[in-house]
Length: 585
Image (cartoon, rainbow, N blue to C red; front, side):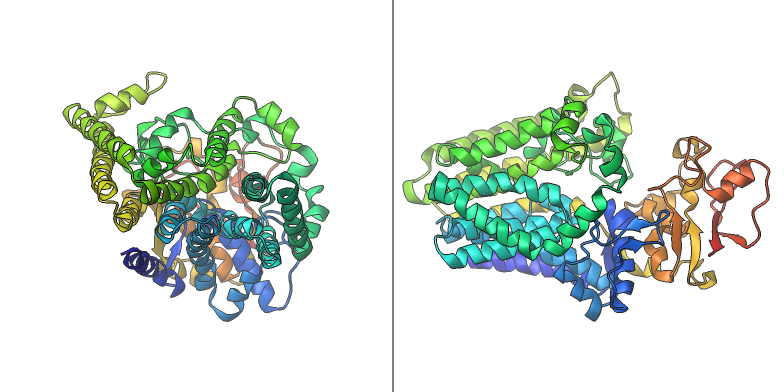
């Protein structure tokens, strides 16, 4: 049955990712469109001309390209752009690394001598976690997440082939260009190496694997070292508030049981994360959820793998402590490191392995205590569901509210539905787990883990590629012209009204509106340059990021000769100049 569950998981992956590979759909949320797609589309065009340029002079007054941690300039996966269209190659990067992450965690679990069902459950818990699905918005982090379990598996092995495997995987992870996540990954790597080989031999194997990785990834880190001193963060650092902005809030531990207790990220309606006001901002990783089946099994393995349990706890504590003092974080990271939530990488690595260990222990020695824990948890989830239903969702949401901010009745109802569905699903899964544990049906637990991942489906956010290839302004664009994104012309807090209900009423509405205003994604595909982008300030004489066109017009001056305007928007203040502008360079 484990084989059937893995086959079902593989078919689900194919069903989800086939439209991406075919270039019919695309991921879009957060950094996918706002950062990575413009870089990779530019890089694909340069690669076609057999170049890896040092500078992307088409975006934000010129940005480093070769060595930029966000561009993966030397990553072998760039060969996809040589043989496939941009949309297909771009999205296959995410899809293949998502699949690779699950397989890599299975390999690590097997290397740690866990049984086949336990390894399958660990792989599903890792690839199907809220943490992993959140990395599908980061082109570089998802690659590190896919390769790092292979690095750990190679170090755990006791032969030279293991070291070679670890070195190759480490090199690939470092070529992915996200040095902070890779550096954070050193801690679980040392944990498993020392646990399996002892301090001396374990550290030696880590050192050999790391050295091989550094040699293989030399083009990337050498190029990065050359530009870091000229970057804004390298020269000026960041503010303490920026460094600690993404830190773990203790209330988010509820996500271990209910996937979205504060609302769904990216959802614009009353069930959206921003509607309740319970969190101040979108988290760096959208959910801590691994599935209640994996959580139950992980809790039972704490005594068996105390080091992994301590690693997970340390990741959570430090992710929270990093937000207590941004100044301390700046001192420790030399002004280059920010976002304490990145330390949740430790949790993401530890919990699936703990869950696998818990399943293995049940098969070896029975699980009477575990079955009782599952039944008790199921009972609590049922009780919680009843409380939410009777209270109309108001009770838990009001308890979580801060500073007296209570959502509207419409939002309370929508959020209450999320709680009802989350707790109800937890109850059913835990009761089913109780039966599976009592019957010692490991395959059933693996299947239940796959079912539990269904709750995180809202994090799979895609849109139709056809929309971005047939925009009204596409036919009027001349390649090489420079666009000014219209959103730069108006501080967002000055907007008089909300965007129109369609397409902004859909999860992808915001990026569709931005595409209408000639945003870098997908404007770069039409040959547009974006010299003024939110990453830079077009006007140094005012305190906001006005575009040159709107800045001149607001001061009663005429637009310079050679500038043209297009794509008027209708939902800004009538007194504002309502157009996107670009000039011929």
